[in-house]
Image (tube, rainbow, N blue to C red; front, side, top):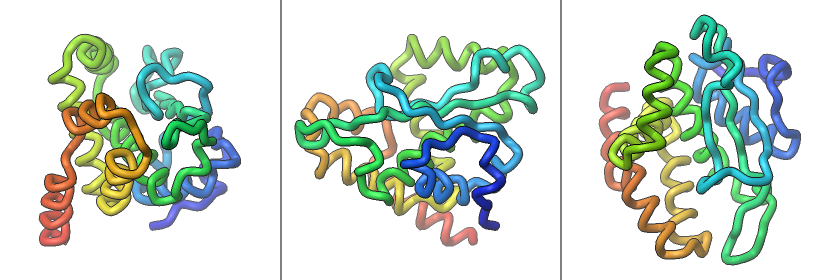
Length: 190
């Protein structure tokens, strides 16, 4: 099922990223009735994109939660500051697809579980690793495996990132081999 642009008009989608966001959302029909705001940000602490529940909606029903995906307005590509929307389309779809994987993980969590999730994410490296791998797994299981691989290849081999950042990515996220394994298993199940 392909989602239409009109379904997400009520959500905030930056015009320069509209096509890639709609493309990524098309892989997640389960999110069709979920309110997600996409916000360009000047500064996201230690990351390029970040998905989280909107704080003001955390204390009501989980079915009425709103989620926010913050997207850094700029990306340091080979030392040059580049507008995020200038990155390759398949890389952006993979990156946004990963963030949507986080939202899939959040959907079935109670408010208390979300609070514990936030604490774990802020205090435990092993918790972060688990959360990032869960988001990658959701993305692959929703058909975004090739996009996730493209994003990882871009970050690790094309973006000119500092070695310290590359090591961090290698520790936190699924390696390409595991992504390909998940993709193979998914195709066997389909």
